[in-house]
Length: 186
Image 1: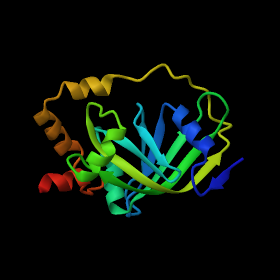
Image 2 (image 1 turned 90 degrees about the vertical axis):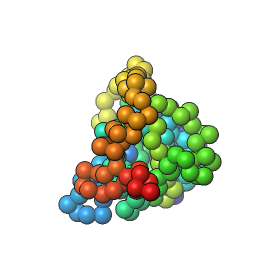
Image 3 (image 1 turned 90 degrees about the horizontal axis):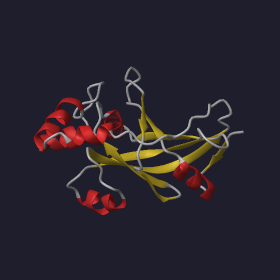
């Protein structure tokens, strides 16, 4: 059944690389704030070491993870086997946001294919890895990535993308100003 590890083992890395989707969970400090769980697709996750991962975050209708990381850094990644042997793998740690046009972005962005709509990189130091059985997870089969987000982003001018982010990504649903919102004020 479930096991806990202080870091990723090689078999965990292999499992992660086989997944076509993962989930990110975060929450604000406030107990009346909203917990966020966000699915992520595309080939956007990179493993830098047994205790360090990052993913290229694409523009979306909200930016909750970014706001929560600014407040407290807590982040959980979840990977689920929808094909093959059952397993759920969670990574717990502290995350931070890396914005474009920064020295850190320049250092880490080369590890990613910069996709249309890229807005930031979420970087995390992992302090706990946990596996669980996944016995009740149904089988689903991967048929390919959706191209909707890429098409949407490619049809936006630079100004339209900035306006969209101003409206949807600068402040969380709980009123927390995100790093993108802070950067825009400078």
